Amino acid sequence: MIGRSLLKMFLKGTKVKSMSKEDEIIQLLRELVRWTRFQGMLKVKEILLDTLKSDEEKLVYHYSDGRGSQEVADLTGFKSHTTVLDYWKKWAKLGLMEPIRVRGGIRYRRAFSLPDFGIEVPKLKTEKKTEK
Image (cartoon, rainbow, N blue to C red; front, side, top):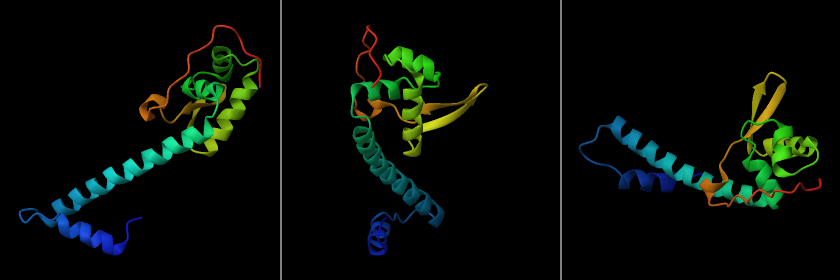
């Protein structure tokens, strides 16, 4: 959070004489949103890197785009879809997944794209892996 004195300095430095008070406020809010978004993106990347440590976790996260847990498990090489469900629940608590309602219940969709944060998505392997 920006300190009161820092905010005052910021406000003084951004005033333009031809702007109305409303325009000044809008400009300041846009500036604050831009910096807040930037700080948030850095934190999201940190959480993604701390949470998705293995290639398997990155694959499950990446392919959790609204598909069912069984489809994600088959695609990423897990024997059981319950592993995918466990990941989804864990990641949802961290705010990394969004629940979506489907006819059969609830699925989860990733909230962020790994490539948007410069995180490489591992290649899918053709042979099936054993469950962790």
